[in-house]
Structures are given as C-alpha cells and as structure tokens.
Image (cartoon, rainbow, N blue to C red; front, side, top):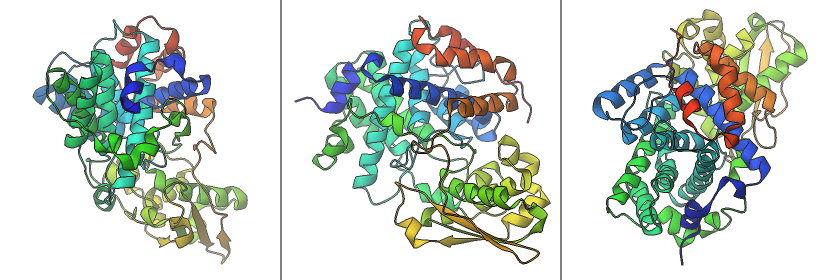
Length: 444
C-alpha cells in the first residue's frame, strides 16, 4: 500500500484544497516575497548568492531580487537563505520552524523562468510543500531528542516538490524523500540561539538537499524509506494529510525577530499603551517567559543575526522607537544608546507555567519599574499573528509594502501583490518570476 504522503504528493491539485487554505497560501507567498526582499539586503543573503553563482552555477532557478541564475541546487540554497536571513517569515508552532521558506525555494528552483508553469499549478506545489513540511517537522520533533533546525525536515518537502515538478513516478518519489531525510542537515537549533550567526535555521541547506535529492532520484539513486514519514510511530501525523489543512495553522510575524521574543514584545507594548510612559522613565524591566525564549539573552548584539535572535534588544527597540522593522535590527540601531540602556537592564526569568505550555503555546509577561517608583505588570501575552490571533489581510499587505519599500522595491510592490493574490488565474508564472528577478535598488 502506498504511503499517504506519496499519494498526496502525486495526486494533490490546488482545487482539492478548501478556499480558506488557498487564500492562506496566497498570504504566505506574499509574506515570503516581502521577507525575501528585506533579506536580500543582508550580508548572509549577499554572501550565499555569490557562492551559489560561483560554486553552484548554471541555468536552473533565478535568484530572488538579484537578476542572476544558479543551478537547481544553488537556487534552492540561495533563495531559502535570502528568506531566512530576515527572521520575519511565517511558521508553525508545533514544528518550531518555517515550512514556507524551504518549500518556496524548492519551487522556484524547479520553475526556471516560469513560462511552462501556470500560477494554479505553482500555488498547488507550494500548498503541497507546506502540508508535507509541517507534518515532517512535527514527526521529527516527536521522535528525536535534540532540537533540530527547519532544514532537517523541510528537505523532505523540497524533495516532494521537486519530485512532483520533475514528474517522477511513485517509486522515485519515495526514494527522493528518503534521500532528503538521510542527508538533511540535522543542525542544532539551540546552538544558534546561544551563539547567533548567519547559519540561522538551516532552511537553505535543507532546500538544497531536498532539491538535489529529487534530481538524484530521477537518475536512479536510492534512499528510501524516510522513517519520519513511513515509521509506525509517526503514522498518526500523516493520516490526515489531504483532510486537515495544516497551512491554515501558520502564524505570521509582525516583527522581524525570533517568534519566541514576540510575546514579550506584546507584553511591553500593552504596558506602554495602558500607561503612556516614555522609554527614558524606565529604571528596570523583568520579562517572565518560557525556557527557550529566556535563552535569547543577547542584550547588546553586534550583528543583525544577534539582534534577530535576541529578546532584550527588540523589546528595548520597541519601547524606544515604537516599532521594530528592518531599521531596528541592523545598522546604526545596534549602537543606539537609548535602546542599549534598556536592553542591558532587562532581566529574563524562566517561568515554569509558561515553559510547560511550549511549543503549542508561547507566553510572556513583563514588569516595568519607572523612575517615580511605579511598578507596572502586564497581563500574560502571546504574539500576534497566530491562527487564533491572526494578522488581517490588510496587516499582511502593509507589512509586505513596508519591506519592499525598505529594499528599494516599493515601486513594484503593488504589481507583485496583485500578481500573487490572483496567481491561481495566471496562465504562466513567467511575468511574476521576471518581477521577482529584478535586483533591489536599496543600499542599506
């Protein structure tokens, strides 16, 4: 009997999904493209794109907001790293990671110039990637003791997308996801939390491994089974594929920092709204949150990666500047004395009642002491943008336009948004691909 995952990869078409899942896929795609535009301005993306062209050159997929091309493997690597460079992309709470980043990178790697791919088919490939990736992530976390990055499981979705787009038969599809799982980067997420660098969430290498696995399976290379797909101990996670639409459970980030920091940001934002104090009045800050979030302890980051994987710094930036966007997690903001004054005073406390709810729920509460002696305590807060607390279409659009503007691409934002939100009616993906290949005009 063929596994449910293989059947889904083979048979799923966009029309099989309910309208709300299709609409959610468009929201995800729009958000990912905006994040990619912002990510293209960061060194992690610039370096990886240069390496993709020099070491993985070819005429496969185009590089987002760059204008150059690389091989299928190089394109998958570079585009996922570009998205992952700017930590504002969507995610799923139970995966503790990001299904969309590597899935979209794999889709673009196999799409070429998009001329032979309809928008409906492309969006169908993306939905397929999300549904496979999320289940692969849940399965891996349920069966391994270490906390691996997204790359460890999104490689399976990337292989599935590649297998679909290459038209592999069921046997080769099975080999592709087995190869991807075996070679997928089981990198240590908490190492990057403790020591933030450009390695980030592993999505680039996961996308590259998955895309390469599909090509290897086409040539006859074997690697099945993928035990996080076919193992008896994970069967329950795959039994509802095609019936339960996990893509609808995705969260969207209002801020470009680790999701774990964002409940604390909402807690301090609540206090400022309720009490109307100024940042200069603050004399002490305590944040009580779940254990993993308390590890985001870099108070004075000297790189954008350190700022994105910090809790104190974005909390302080939000209190000082009122918002956190590209300008608050890079460049001059990293040396802002007003932000650093607050970030270095923040005390992080591992709160057992919140830790017990992670990863399904992420909570924080904040206590701020003012110079006049007032002690302000927030209600327990969660991050905005979850399925239970969603960002509206208008908020996602506003975020997209802001990121495009910051990347010097504001003049094309409306046209790209229209293409994405009507993608299922497009006879060809080529016009959108051409727009996404346009190099950024920003010089941040």
